[in-house]
Amino acid sequence: MLALWLLFSIGARPLLLPDEGRYAGVALEMLRGDALQPTLDGLPFFHKPPLLYWLDLLPLRLLGTNEFAARCAPALFGWLLGMALFLHLRRRHGEAVARTGLLVLATSPLFFLGAQYVNHDIGVAACITAALLATLRAVEDPRRVALRWLVLGWMFCGLGVLAKGLIGIVLPAAVIGPWLLAQGRWRQVLALLHPAALLVFGAVALPWMVAMQLRHPAFYDYFIVEQHFRRFTGTDFNNRMPFWFFVVVLPLLMLPWTLWLAPALRRLRPVDPLLAFYAWWIVVIVGFFSLPESKLVGYVMPALAPMAALLALVLVERPRATRRAGWIGAAFCVAVVGALAWKQPGSRRDLARALAAARAPGERVVFIDDDYYDVPFYADLKAPVVIVSSWDDPDIARHDNWRKELADAARFAPDRGRSTLWTWDRVPELNCTPGRVWLLAPADQVARLAALAQLKVVRAERGVELLVAPGRDCAKAP
Image (cartoon, rainbow, N blue to C red; front, side):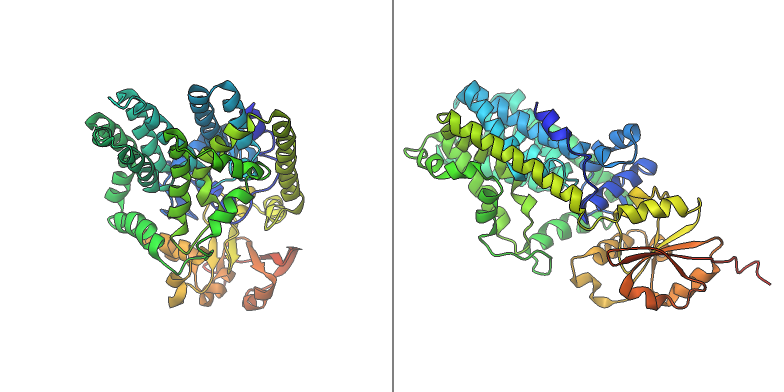
């Protein structure tokens, strides 16, 4: 039922920008090119590791280039998170609590929308949840560590690293380690480092990174140092929010269930080790992501499972309120998806389809001063587009935006970067393009294209214009 709940609406709305258009496009490029190396507009793209893209390769191949296929990977991650929580709650608290906890999770807007949103947050949340619950099973007996469950926990840590980087191992360690030490179980902490478990982690997490390092000597500094440590401590990224942001966001996006948060917290006294584990898990996730100035809503998803567990222990005693809240939560989740399908915020799907209908194979496509991430996906573009912007601006590296992403990617393939990232002075070169040239440009930037001969507007939509110029083969011109 959870799978059906997650799948029924994943194709009901266009891709949201920028994340869904970007990451669905990366997966599509990998399907048509190198399945090992993520690329964005043909350039090596190492902002995030590849697990999300890999899981989308088969749906995109079997189901075609559409929203349902692109969202299969996050839906699978959501199902994994829910399954891990249900099995744990059923074992430790009984069937009724397990069903209640799964209902709380499934009808929480943060989970429901995250499990049908193409980005990496739900993936790492699912892997962290599965890793922690498997490891908790491994240390269930204070006198020993169950190796098979420990190995499973480390395997999910490895997958977490492939889902979104080092937090896939750092956060599980920050939860389980101090919790064991607080109970004086230091021998079990040492036993967590069993060689077999470490070997499995390395076998899962390391091969892709080693392969990329062998291809690109600068990979380690960029992917590990810059994208993890510098990004975590930096102050020049988008979405700067106050320290208390997630303290508000997590309860807000789990409504209506968090109306019972106060009685759930009162159950923590006297402290039960398992309830303390849930509480500490939430504290670690919220605290960790509260430290950097840059904060996005999806970062806090790894705290969904313990929140659902604590709430379920209270709600199982209130069946009538639980049923009523379940219907309210489900209705709200569906309403949000319906609103997104209706409003289509930021989507360029209609422009892309107009481009696909009018463009002949092989004709060049150019983006002007923006990266319309969903256009290559919907227009079925099989070659990189030219993107015209101020690529010679020295301030690009100081701003966390689409220009920096592409400029960073071009560092790993400078020749390809020069062929796709054009400065404004190269616009007249488009006059010497064999066949027509198709351009997408913000309406306020069209005047800068005056050097193009016979430029015509084909379609305009929400401040963006689709234009065409005839082009010509200057090498053959008299």
